[in-house]
Length: 403
Image (cartoon, rainbow, N blue to C red; front, side, top):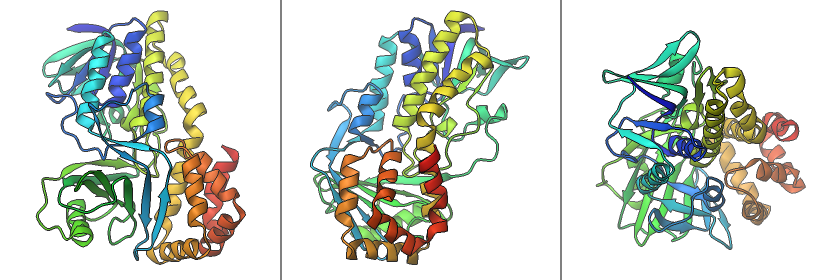
């Protein structure tokens, strides 16, 4: 039997950020990571905003940054292009393995201990409270346990915090060479034939290399990616593909309990529009680390005390999650024909530059502001109503107006 004050399950960014923040407040923190190496396997697209890295306290470094992104091109199912070019670097392409390793070093420097190759099999329960975890014949007690185990969230499921989950899409990506791409422009490809329920992406890595992938809500993503890469680049022989999940369903109903907090992908704290979770999940995890440390200091790991973590993220980020979830549901309802008509209308009516300006002013992670400004532009709103209809926009408009 081992004991610690705060136990974190999972050494991805959310777990490591939660651990770092708790340790910086002077409590004992132990992280359990099921793999023998932090950051492995790496199945992330690895596109993080400049502002987002600042928010989670990470300084840009050549250690993990592979390339810079200054804009993007979005393609309708029929290939119509909407182009957005910014006058500055908006995002970094990162090597997630190296980023995670750097975060683990920072956590250790803050006083965190990390056990690698330790797979948690179940939580330790006493009455209604979580009092630690066990696995591989070993029990570890803790005053507060933070679940950062990732998208499948079996531990949170065992407590009934995650029931039927929507928007968990299988995804796949790989890195290809010998391709011609615009150096600092991301590509997003829409269409039910390519990636139903989501999109395909092409992220330049510099030179003739790109990181490509997709997620979908039905069909086999590996086969779909092979078809896409043959269509886009004429590629037939591909490198090994990395599998993972893309989460578009929004946060789970409850992220706290007696002695227990859920963060990151396990909590569904991702952007429903793009599936990205490092930044918003990381912000929530940092607050969880603070709440866990304070609970230890006060000797009160009850759900009543720990709910301040959820109160914070719902107050500060709840409107963002709701707005992006509404936007995702709207996109998922649009047929390929409707998307083609919408893109054609935007091009014909000169709205490409309007959208580009809003994107340049906007925030890649906190997207509610961009969505609100877009719908307040009379010409944009009229075009959307004409192509989509008022009813299609009603849910998104309510979320932007009232939350």
